Length: 158
Image (cartoon, rainbow, N blue to C red; front, side):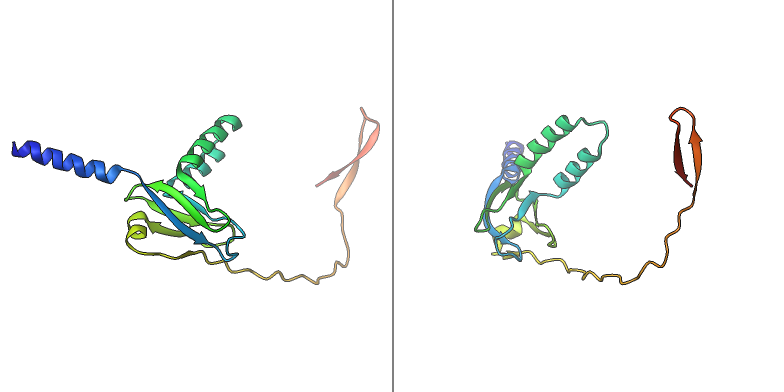
């Protein structure tokens, strides 16, 4: 009898931890809502998508279908106001990313316990420095050869 109660208790804990919960919040980048922030459950999905896209054996349509299904299931984007809703497990990690911003990651359990302000920080810009070098001369190395079939001269670059 005690073993049966212990089994039911452990089963209840397992079911409780494996259930998805809905997380709602606000995530902004430095543009304050001008650009959308993407939210991904675990970075495994991002790595998988990159791997699938670089796999030469995958056809483009097949790869696109897999990526689309995974994207819908494991990622979301913020709306105009920066609000988002996503379903995840308590043990998952949410990754917040936006173009030209540093990625932030937060445990779902931490997001539920604390009121965390998700404000992505911009990456540092590297200022473009124009080169003012002037070209003194151009040199071409090659030779002229005759091709009999086309009866034209072709220049071959060595």
